[in-house]
Image (cartoon, rainbow, N blue to C red):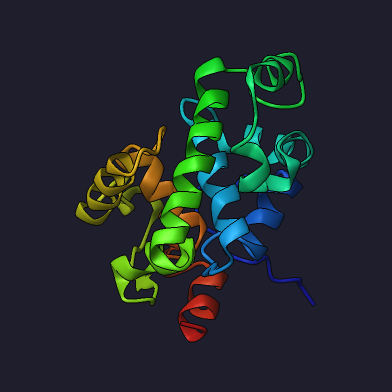
Length: 194
């Protein structure tokens, strides 16, 4: 009897880290503030790079950035950011590292104003994931009117590295949109759990 291979989205390669991320995390709705903050930071760090690079460094990011504790990151001073620039386990980009500190402060302010960051970000879709129906990966957009709107609002709130393409990747990662292609085994699983 032949073992049937799972059909996955076209962007997934054979790397076990990528496969595991696709199968367990990508597109699963997240309502936890700390995890939402982590993904917002990681998506910003990914700008101009491959997502697999970020996934391979994810545990290092967690260690280096106090497990994405926004209250701790908001207090980082120049010596801490200089130290992070010497950390080969993360992306050593001065602008991106400064943006993490800026975003921690903006995140805390947004959280205070909205009750939670989850309430803030999910209000753009009424608290429910958008169920897309893409037949193949080439149909999936890199941005939408909604990602434009979220990007504009985040920038207004002081966030950095939150352009519309980064915002759309964030929306995909945290399940605000279900962009698994319809042939992918995860598409129906996530559609059922909406």
